[in-house]
Amino acid sequence: MKLQFKLALYNTLTKIAVILFTGLFTLLAIEKLSVNHIEVRLQKSKDMVIRQMSSNEIKNFLINQPDYNILNQEYVLIKPIVFEPNPPNAIKYRTAQRVVDNNSETYRILSTRFNFKNKTYLLEIGESTESVEDLKTIIKKFTLVVLVIALALTLASDLIFTKYLLNPFYKIIDRKLIKVNDPLNFDYEKVKTSTQDFNLLDDSISSLMKKITDLFLLEKQFIANVSHELLTPISIISSRLENLMLQENLSEEAENKLFASLKTLNRLKSIINSLLLISKVENNQFNKSDSVKITDVLTEIIEELEDRLEAKQIVLNNNIKYQYTITGNRPLVHTLLFNIINNAVKYNYPKGTLTIADQVAGDKYILTIIDSGVGMEPEQIEKAFNRFEKLESDEMESFGLGLAIVKSIATFHHISIDIRSNRGKGTAFTLTFNS
Image 1 (cartoon, helix red, strand yellow):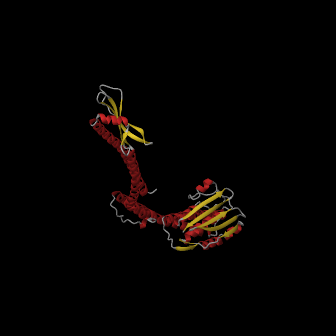
Image 2 (cartoon, rainbow, N blue to C red; image 1 turned 60 degrees about the vertical axis):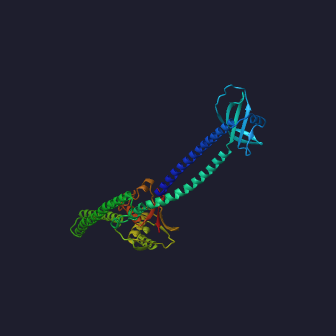
Image 3 (spheres, rainbow, N blue to C red; image 1 turned 90 degrees about the vertical axis):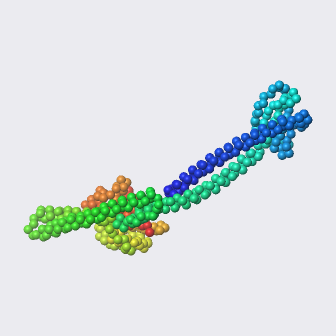
């Protein structure tokens, strides 16, 4: 989840919690205040009833018990009880049900005792709590509506604000991390922002990229030096050995030793060239402006390997159906496919099969190269692209750099590679070209 949505979600949840707490507190407070308000009114009604009490009114209450108002919201009840010379002046409150006109109502009831003309009476004054319950229902609905509106407004406002706030951050990530393929072309221009943290991030990335650029230039210089300082002496020594082999007075033993030394030098030269190629590819020192037709490259490779296919009597199944073209470096794409197909021939059994097929899935082109060769163990598949990692075979010319070169070129061209293999049952390379 993006930081923007996490911030908005956090703010929304905290505000919901505050609103819920406030709503619950409001409901409890209103209920308490309403009950207290009713009790104060009941107290005033009790004082007024006792103050205005007369014999006729008491007789009337005793005859028509209880006396409800027209809306059944209040009632007053007076009934005689056992005489007490000094009844306690205590007031009790309770909530109880009363049936009025066959309807059950809930009342808040005040109870007290008083003496009038040497008689003790129980006075009850009740007030319906229906209005309080209605008020609580209204407040609940109102709180729910406020919560939903507040949630929507909070989420929208937080998303808008966090998007505005984090816009410089995403610009920094996009311009200075995601879109950086070549440190030499890094954009050091600062992203405009008033947030100090983002300015610090911008400066830190630029500083780090400056160090990477310096190291990159040093590596390029090192590669150039290696190319000159190692390959030139090797070429000179190779030439001298070749000239020595042309002498007629050499013994057969000396000739064999010179030939072995020359072969070792050529092997060293090939290793150095392979390592230099990997380094140059990984440092983006090649152009990717060629229009490369995959079928043409495959045709060239098959022609180059035709003799080896015939020597091992390998049956080639060319099932290419599509004319797919990519923009890249043609020599590198040729090297990539050549190394894979060459391995499929090298590690295949005599009279085996080699199948090259393709398919299009959406906007992706998928090329599959399948052989019926020796295959690989799962641990060998994991290390297949490591440098100097070789399969156990009789091939003496293998340096264990072919698939390392393949991986570097594939990454350079944004090509995905998948290997499926079983020991003794062959290997399948799947290359996915992303358009």
